[in-house]
Image (cartoon, rainbow, N blue to C red; front, top):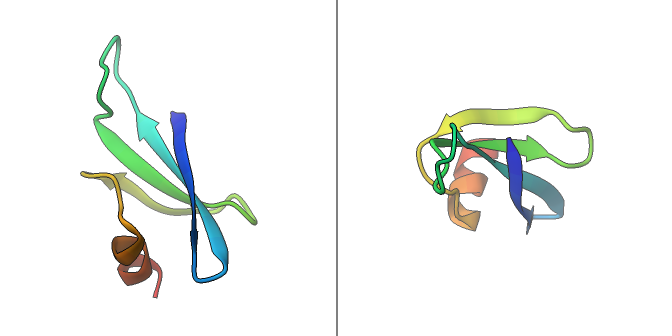
Length: 59
């Protein structure tokens, strides 16, 4: 997994990581992790999560 971005949403920071297979330049899926405690919120997201999508997922 490679960190792609850290996004601040409603006072919390979330790390978006991409899972790459082999020499692929595009991630096969994304993992959303809460930066504060490193807990994984969601795995295998098919597309890069927007701020609104993160709000939907965590609330």
